[in-house]
Length: 109
Image 1: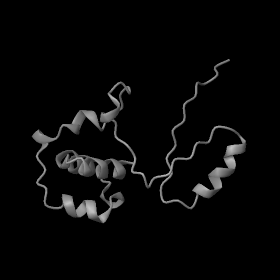
Image 2: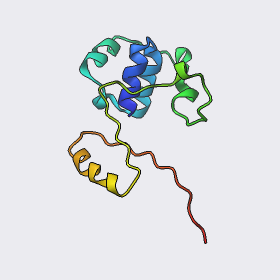
Image 3: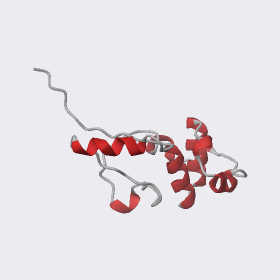
Image 4: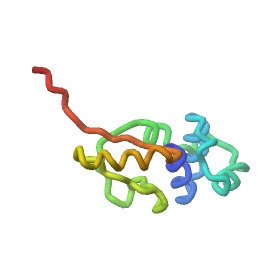
């Protein structure tokens, strides 16, 4: 997912943030070649990187919609919400990346 974030930042012209994020998280192997070629000559300047606190930390989703980082349209998101949906998981096993977002509360009693 960080590779997609680097690609999105690059598309939005935030190359300092993209290079910083990619360097700190060592995710350059998960970034498309065309994006890497756009970033190869960028001289990273930490003072110009506004992402140091913003993108490497989790926070509440209270920003306006146009400020959210979005996945590229080529990325398919599959919702697994019921036992019947679990059949979808088998088709995902052949994918290069699988992300999991689970929201639950432990039952302590």
